[in-house]
Length: 356
Image (cartoon, rainbow, N blue to C red; front, side, top):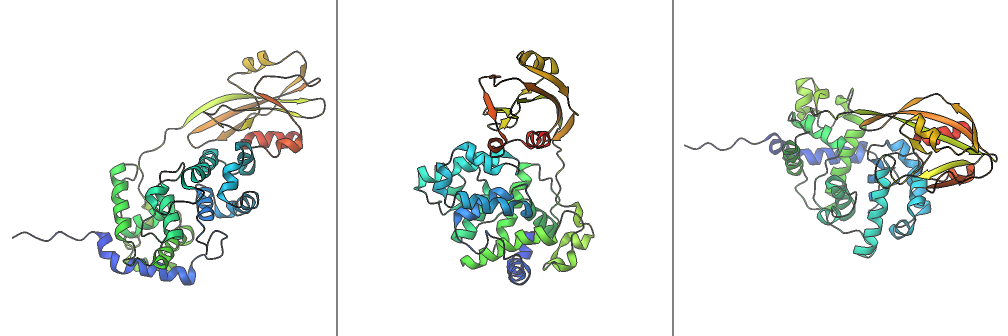
């Protein structure tokens, strides 16, 4: 006699899970963020991009400034890359800004300035991955589709005691399937909106990476990780990113009027497309590039700037250049009113601010 297959953890939870999360969101979730309570895909998309790897408190001011400067996707599409980078400056991870700009241009070119309504179509746009596409489709168009950003992964892996290594693609696909199983059974737009927002809020305010406040969680009694007494062991991601290190010498040149020499970085590589102090692989290479009009050489304190996969050991060298000689064909002199509006890598801005 053939036995029936055992229901998965997601299938067992599915009948009540979504309703409980959505109900909690109504009374305890976040509701006053500027990108909430709207079905405008431009605003939702903008917030989703900015919130990738960035805290809400940091994003708030940037979100407002972007909307003031670019109130609609067509305005963002028409902007120059330098304008976008300048407004983004300080948020980091500039590939997000570059993809955001390209995405706005494609929305205008391919879709007549209106975001497509399905997650599948949204994923064809630059910088919009599966989870971001699902968030836009759920919030703005009521599509019944699962999200799986970092916060939601943490919530679901803990509730389900999903201990497979998420650095393995097959295991992540399995979690996507579980996330889909847990979606609200109804197609009503309000249900998917509340549930999706509820999962985000749980991950951001209750189901924290360290010291989650499980007693306040609306699904704590159904959470397998809490029952184990070890919620912090989830999610599991065993494959570690290999870190590397690189030493760079940075020329902090100023002219007799106090202007700074900045060059636009190549389209690929570190700080792609941003303005930067000239960068060299050695102090010798830096000295060889200096014209005779530059003097008062001064080695400043080196420091480490941490990127996602690399530690940059930066060695600033300060020089004063008489007159307004051109140092290369890749840059020009900028006064303080100009460079403060540019897209600058964080360490470059730090050096320029410190130098006055």
